Structures are given as C-alpha cells and as structure tokens.
Image (cartoon, rainbow, N blue to C red; front, side, top):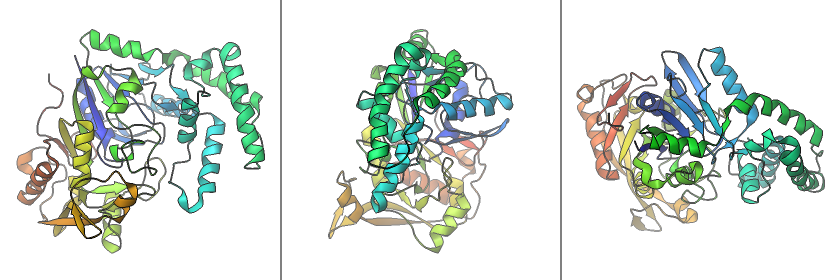
Length: 430
C-alpha cells in the first residue's frame, strides 16, 4: 500500500497532532521525517491529553508503530522524557523506532543555539533555543554525531566527538568567552543514552521499504509548516529543515512514487511564532481576544503566537509547492460568535496588487492584505461531527476557502478530541 502525508500548510501549529492521531487508526505506521523537539503536537483522546515533540502522534494507537526518520534531529534527553511520560500512562512504546542515521542534538548544540540567538540581537529569528539549527549545521558540515554512533562509543563516537569539540570549544572560549565543554561529561551522557535507546535504534529506511512492500500503509507526519521551510519559506525567518513534502523523501529514504496523497492542515485563521513577515497579522484588542479565545500559546515554548485572518494567497502557494491532494481545516470553532470573518485574497505592495506569495522576503514584509469580508455565525460549530451540523455562514466560509486555495477540504476539525471531527471525504481509503 502507498504512503499518505499530513503536513503543515501555514507557519506551523495548525493542529497536525490531532489530525494524525485521528487518521493513525487506519495505518500500520506513523513516520516523522523532519525537525526536532522544536515541534509540539497535541493529542487528545480517551487516554487523556498528550503533548508530543519527537514521538509520532500515532503512538497511542495499539499496534501502530512509530518511526523517527533520518531527517529528524534527536535530543536524547527529550526523547527519553517523552518515553518515560508515555510509559507512566500505560502507552506501549515498544514499536517506536529511531533511525540510526538521525543526528543527535548534543549539549553543546543547545548552548551554541542560545549564544548565537543572543548575539543576533534585534535580528534574532526567534528560535526555540533547543539546538536544532546548530545540529543541522553540523550535519551538512559533516561533523555531526548520528544516533547509530552512540552504539559504538570507542570506535566511532569518541574520535568524532574529539573532532567536534576541538572546534566548538575554540568557539566557546575565544569568541563567546564561555566555559569549554568537557568530553568526559558528554561521554557519560552518551553511555546512558545508548543503554536506554539501543532497543529503538534501527535502520528505519529498510523498515519503511519493507512495510510498503508488504502491503502495509504508512502516514507521514510533518513538523512545523510549509511557510517555515528552509528553502521555500520566508527566509531567513524559517526553520532548519524542510517541512514541505519534499523533505519526506530525503528525510526517510522514501521513493516519491510511493506517496499517494498529500494533505495540508490549515487553521481557519493564521498564526505564527517568532519573527518574520505575516501579511494578514492582526494587532490590538481583537487580536488579543482571538489569541485568548484560542489559547494561542506555543506547545513547546509557551510563547504567545501572532494571529491573523486566513491568508488564501499563502495557502495557495502551499498547495502549489506540495502538490496537495486535499486540505484539513482546523479550529473552525474558534471563529464561532464573531459578527464577521475575513479572508486575505491578495496583497498590495508599492501601489500594485499581487496575487502570488513573494519569494523575496523584503517584498513580503511590505505587503498589505486585501480582505474579503464574510458574515459570521451565531450557532456553534464546536463539536460538530457532520457537515449538515454547520451553520450556513460557516459552511459558506469553508467553501470560499476551498475555492480560493483551489483544493478540496477533506476534514474539518471542530475541537481538540478525536470525536470532534467532520470527515467530508476519505483521505486514506479502506
């Protein structure tokens, strides 16, 4: 059977965790392909509420394996914390596999992330400070440490760490004027990580290929969102990996012909964390009201998210970049009770109207939104489970988003739990 992907269509935080948990019961494996524990996926089901950062969101389904692919950067401390938390609540994690090719976020990466962000001052991009960027830098510089290296401390890990620390400590002491990192301290941590993670470390590319060859289905779990893609987002205000569908192939060793469907998750409005252009951003009292009603604070950092109206220009760009076969619309219920709702249908910049998402970030920063206003609705959409339960104005809003983006909405989420979902069209057949 083929693979199906669920990715972020905006700037992340779209509600992918809930959607993947909802769909995971129909697949054999849920596979994470990019990012690190800078992601935060919230899952609410009959077991309770779970906040996941590295472990795929299908972990709560019995018999469904979870795979952390080679494109992910792994903080072993964070991963062990999640494993312990899930285990304490009775969740079986024995079917979690971590690619031996995935790179390790070392303690010095976290220190370096904080130092670099502080040094940038007003030009800081708003990272989570979890060492994600520096780990990817070491990966492409060919001085990184991979998860599989932990299982060969004397033969592989020690010489690679010695090489890495010779440069990192020179940077710490001579540029940032902080204390150097001690090799023995890091090795002590690595021994603990190796002992506990050894049962999970596997050649996951082969596992994925075997699943597909054996007529099993897999669900690809994206992290962050397309507009934060290091190549296709609003650079430099982006993440360090490729959350778009292209990242799934290199982040898993997956043949692109195996991907049968690509579905992007969009909020019914827009949010963004950190710096960078956001044309439909709202400010003032209404923005505060929307943020508090939706509790728009980061799962990972707790930072307040910036909020805005739905941006159809950016969403259409996501459709084109990812070749979307469908959309999921989340948090429609947050717009319940507003007298009017708006959709950004274009931009104005330097006296001209544009209808495409600019690749030039400087140009994007100058874009002013062109809005289309729609009447709001008084009847609730919260907890609705069928399209017929939606107020007429809410359904009209949904249909207009479909028309503007040029893509069919297959699922509408009306609350945080699995049950609060409208399945309009099947994403995964069978």
